[in-house]
Length: 342
Image (cartoon, rainbow, N blue to C red; front, side, top):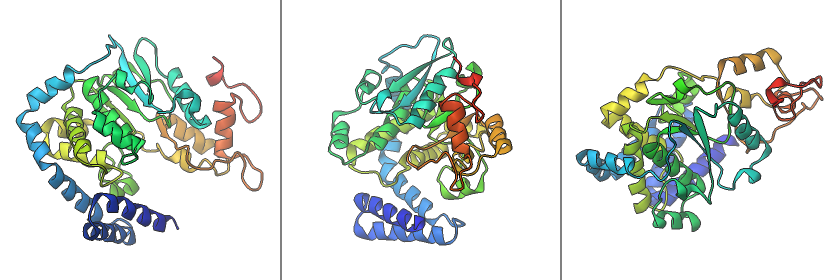
């Protein structure tokens, strides 16, 4: 059922961006990759070639005018952060409309950032233009439903990193230890793994993850990506793939020596970022739970799945423990957790 839904959703997305023949052909490749358990990468290669062809003129413009374009982003600041590093979080509806799990991730982020090191900025539908200008025609496409708010979020993250640098972290990320000044000072940083599941299935090959990225304001990678995406969003009403941002980063990786070096410089990290959420509804396993928390700084969650505090047999789940400890502020035996005592 899951595979069928993936195929159906993928075809619907392709059909918006391509003609019938190319959408059908692309989805056929998508099905082939699924049937081979992603030992093949026919679909990813097809989309990558299509995207590169669509963007070829814009890429040439950037390469020919890179100095002027980089200066444009550097002059586009609307806010100054002084010695602090901006940490960008986006929830368009605002803090009060966050689901409980998202709200806990956001509150916890504040506990993990020292006030003299970073400044957390919650981007909402009402304030994003305080920090970055998005062309009105693109915003109209969002309002008209031609593009989604997820698409807008991707455009905002690359523009914010291009202009200000700092850290982009999805609102559904739970941080387990303090975010250091040293980490925020890296020219580029993102989750990076060698996990076969992700390497096979995504164009990133798990060399980066757009849900958590750190960059210097001088980093060329995001100036290139923002310029390309700004132009594409202006000229098109739909994106060919949900992970369009990653296809553009992949182009930067292959075309810019600086981007290639920045991405390759990141060591393997946060390899268990998804493991906690994937086991949330299983019976609480204290050893495994602790091992993940102790070895993984950034845990990626989602608010879109049903979570249960007990198994069908009435035993505490990993989510049940997480909720009692980190949201309610108590352990399973009712004692106060110092993590939430402030």
